[in-house]
Length: 272
Image (spheres, rainbow, N blue to C red):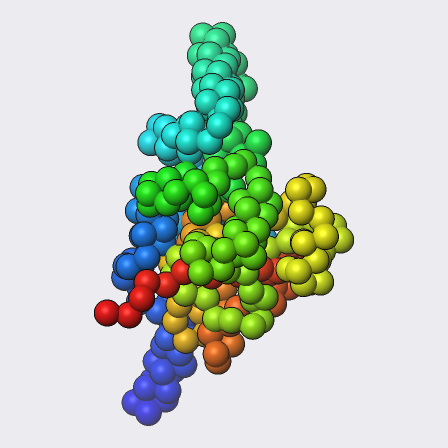
């Protein structure tokens, strides 16, 4: 009997060790920009990504609702309707090819149809900055606070310039991520360039010049964890969980991943 109990305990241990924690409730931020980002994340199916995964999430379907939402994002920026039309034409072309192959009873027909239904075919041009711009418009944020753009550096430069010219009324103030813990509504930005900036102030000398970056909207902070929502993250709108230190500051990204270079802290409402 004692031997059988020991065996049962040994069999139970792996199951306990691999048990996942209970899912968290959705973020419920008070900040309008963060709240708008959460609403968009819900529309896309609540995709959650832990840190910097090597593989895409299992849900990569380009559903009609997602494709329509992406078209709305592009339509929210100047000239973006052209990109939305290109995506539509591409999708229609792949669907037409799949239909023709089906009529010919071709073995390639399932491949063509699956390609039409994969978000990877909508990942270019990159639309992460378009997502941030669209969310800002949904949050009724004025253009002067965060201009609509298909490039992160354009609204980053505008936010830094506004903070330097009119700090008392600027919507965002720039900080090094290691100097400040983020709050919901802040923008956490990573440098995707081959040669990265050592500090965000290095951007002052190159304002107006291209630099590949990526920003996510912070929606919730917890002990040891920062949750932020971004667009075109593995091809979708996803909530990412980044590790934080004891003070709530985001920890450095792995060396082979884009490093955090800038925290645009949202202006907080006066107390009371």
